[in-house]
Length: 234
Figure 1: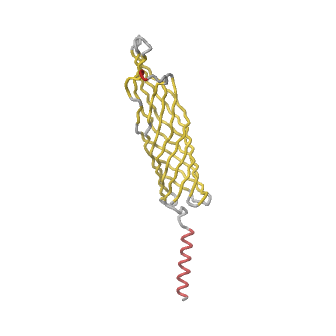
Figure 2: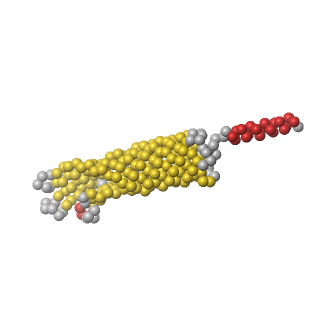
Figure 3: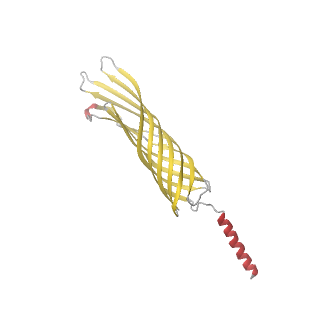
């Protein structure tokens, strides 16, 4: 009997000790969604060619753009251990448009991304995290005639979707309001190349008709995003 009691006490003690030093993240998987407010900065190069003037014109212009956009993403993660976790994102950085002269430039950017995150020791209230990610952005660029004159458009791409590497760095704090649930407050810096678009227009108001060739190139797009998300552990 004494031997049995000793064995039971040993098992209980071992269980308690193991519980005291167990992984503070009770669940291995988590998933959720984030909403983001993004400030984007990029430069656009416009190559403008005008034909049938007394002298043809070929000029390059560089325009700086700054924009605020709303976007978001869905995410799913797996905790490797107490410190490291892997996370995947499928999201939309936002929709941006800007008018100049008689045209409007717009960019829409969905993306997919994989992150490696480092987490601090988990406390009852929450924990900090920081990490980096790599992915692919799929920006779609379009240039439209603000005068809405279909006859002015001749040939070329009405919109252009390109594929660009995406690099991101993020940090934040996760709060535990209830078991299994957490609220994510974070910041993310992401960068990708915007792509290019070529179009040909005709200005019939001039005699002879002027043909305008536009080649728009969007360079490095830098996004500063404040994120608010909610997630569930399982």
